[in-house]
Structure formats: C-alpha cells, structure tokens
Image (cartoon, rainbow, N blue to C red; front, side, top):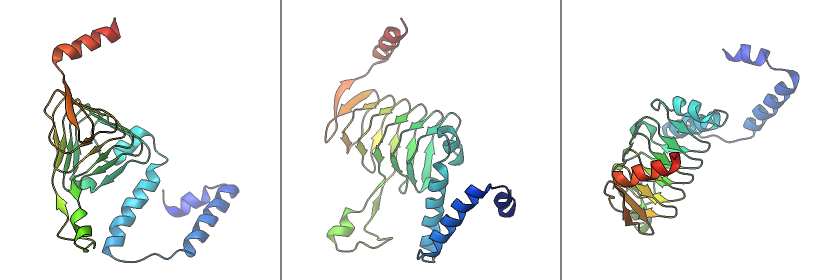
Length: 208
C-alpha cells in the first residue's frame, strides 16, 4: 500500500491524529548525516514494533522459527546478532551485539536483562567520550542453548555462558559460566551444578 492509498483509507478522526503528528514534526530539529540516518532507522523500527505481537516482532527482526520478542526490547547492532529457534526475550531487555552476540535455541532472556558485548568505561576515564572511539572494547558474548536468564540481571562483554544454565535475578555475570550451572550474585558465582537427572526429576514432578 502506498502513502496516498493509506491516507485515503483513514477516517476523519484518524486524519486529525495524523495531522497533529505531522505538525509536531515541523517543530522538531532533526540533524542530517550518516550517523543520524543509522540511528533514525533503528528508532523508527523500534517505534513500529510497538504495535506488533511478540512473534511478529521476532519475524520483523529476522529471528528463527518460534522466537518471541516482547515490548521495548532493544537490539544494538542487530546485524551481529544470531540466535537459535524458540528464543524468548522479555520486556525491556537490551541485547548489545556490537561486538557480536550469540544466543542458543530454547533460551529465555528475562525482563530488563542487559547483555553487553562492549565496554566504553575507558573513554570516560581518558576524557575521550566521542562516538567511534578506539578506546571502546568489543568482545563477542555467547549464551548457550536451554538457558534461563532471569531478570533483572547483567551479562558483561566477552562472557561465555554454557548450555542449560540458570542465572538468578540481580546477578552480574562477569566471567564464563560452565554448562549445567546455576549462578547468582554480584559477581555471579556457581551455587549449584545441574544434572540431567535433576532436570528429569523436575519434569516428573511437574507432570505427575
């Protein structure tokens, strides 16, 4: 549908709303340039996604079958983001893929979880906090398959979380986590080793 057909199909009340929105734009000051174009595209996509369902939003982002993405999720550098099937991302999560980010299949990223693949603290300490600074450090971050990352929590850049791990709320994960681990705390530490027997026992309890 082109813009003219879209406008013609609006009822009078909707046209008034559209007119007010356009009038609002006329009072704003927008900058032009490559950086603005890049960020504007991201902002527009984020705005449009607010009226989508979680599976529509995942499809809009090009994610695999069965993925669901809730409202207000922000993916930084989505071109560097990969994930498996049936991944769920909760409201308000921030997934930073600027340094590369992989999430395995059947993993859930909880509400308000921050997953980072870069750090820029040195730009501040060096009084060099400009866009594109060479002092920004980027490292690929990985979250394995079958993981439950409870929110809110934070995973720092360069961390590798293995398969079938549980990260409890309020944790800050600053180092690698072995597969079949439950971690908690700041900094996060392994508080339990998960076995397949434990998983099957829990499944039996729920289904009995």
